[in-house]
Length: 430
Image (tube, rainbow, N blue to C red):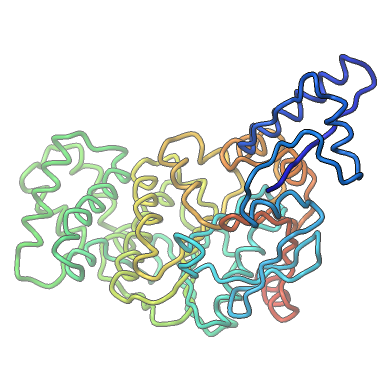
């Protein structure tokens, strides 16, 4: 049985009331009910002194793990010799090592890295990927700023350049011919969502007409078709349609070589990166959805532990089809041995929509770096952070992160081993 008492002091009655209200507010955020011992103030004061006296006798039965949180000078380290290296605990100096794929500890292996520009979020994400690589865990990187190219090549991985007119192409229809029959409805919807992004939107009639063309095409015993084949079927049936006019641009010329050609990329390497930097702004959403959908199908075909890293993920969230797809991916990727890593410099992008909020609260592991006050307040509400943790985020230096890993909340500094550090820094051109 445990008794826990706190004495609050103030310069005058008004200050005392303010201090009590602040303490009670902090307790409520941590789901703790604080009770004042009215008419027993003297006994409460004496019970809080180091006299070994419990004059109030308010005892509770607590689990050991809950009791440990009452000792603020004790900080649990995460030390698993078989895990990823995350840095060191800023309060104890101990190494922070644990396995995100540990099913006994985490419901999924998903990771979110949130911090403003210059706080070290890309460095942190790269160190997670490298640490996993040393343990035989593969990685696929969507790289909108071309930050990971040298790192991928140094590890003898494959780094592919995707842009209009480039030599690399991905066929959005591949998953329809390589997956299970029960996945076909979802995969058809993915094709329709891609076309919706290309065309701005699809109304119900256009969506139904396009779905009919896709189903007609995949029913034919022919080699795997491409998006251009869907277009030609649709064009013959609906030559005056708005979709015909717009989609024709995406399946011909330089765009056609990217979006309407047989797949010619190979994911056999342990680490694969996709350079998206040279994509025009209008191409980024459809290219990202095309790539993520195709990679998801690949992950399902070949089940093995792999990280799928999406850098600057917040920029994609304004597009509803991408939000829906990422939510589905986050919820199901663990089943196929994968780990989704989302990196963003603006947490507020996630909280603007219901799907975004689901997406950011899904990961079992979060690395929260330096934040502006408004963003820190949103994170406090979403993850029940204490005022002390919020203050840490608002004053964090480059490389400092608040690590949320299951029930553990530790201030850590991301510092990769020398060979990793050199590789990451050189890769980013610093």
